[in-house]
Length: 389
Image (cartoon, rainbow, N blue to C red; front, side):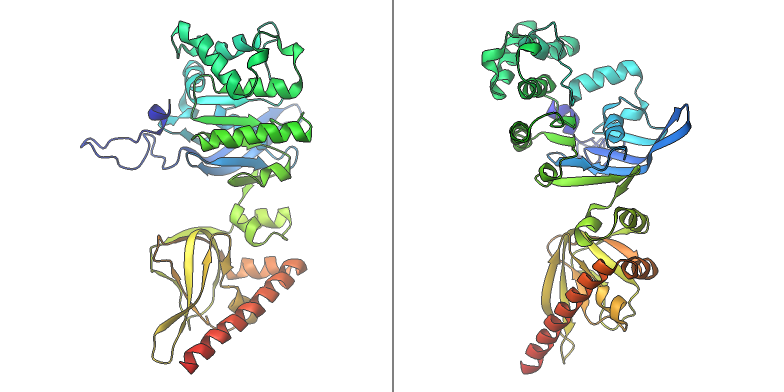
């Protein structure tokens, strides 16, 4: 299963071009996805031009308030709902272009779905529930299906209950079986919609630990959750507010911004990539932007008496720079270069938006002003070392 979905497209000369068949670079890509529902009260837009990228092997939590669009986002990926506009790309498949019949076949082989309310068939035993996806997709020889189902029950520590009906076991046990069923066809991706929402905290932790072990085995998991404590344990979070995705690096860099401010700032962030060693900002130039590091690292340098660049600090993902001159005025006081080890990706914010956002949030302003003071001391210490040398 992994081979078919993760295999890269050949360019015809036996070499990979690094992209999947529909032109996506990541295992999962949602591009400009909008979803509008027609209701008795009028049109309701649940997702608003959403962009999401997920790589193979990631464990991603989708979080947000009730009604923010979390479940709709997952349903786009699973093909349960269709986008009003935009593209849904998974591996080699443009999911939004599949017919209903094609969707059922694709979903059965490539996607495992775990629901909040388990959705086990009440008249089938637990082992029969797990065999059902294999029967539907015809993925294993009939004689192998029961053996595989029993193996999956063993993986979730439910072998002793194999021949019971779902009503004979607890909710936490049913969720374990539901996860085993989602794994029946060995899909590379699992999507889980509030899988711990109806479980006590201890059982929820057990289920989450099981997810972590599956990621360690190479699975990719997207999980909708309202539990912020569990969300802190994943490799990445996607935050949705009123149908819009908030840039994660922004929430890490400026956590005291309100959700509304984060959404507004996200609209003004421009992604940019700098090659290893490239100058992002140069000492002495006018200050016009604020930068949040989204991937990679940068080196902060000051210019010595003889024009040489002296490193004074390094920064990595989740940190920011360029704020000193925007807050205190003047030209750039340092040079910042992309790390020689892989370069850097940043989200850039223009001066006017930075000023209106930071100026409108006293908590963020105070926190940033303290960081500015600390960095100025650090820079001054670096200059003193240069003079003494």
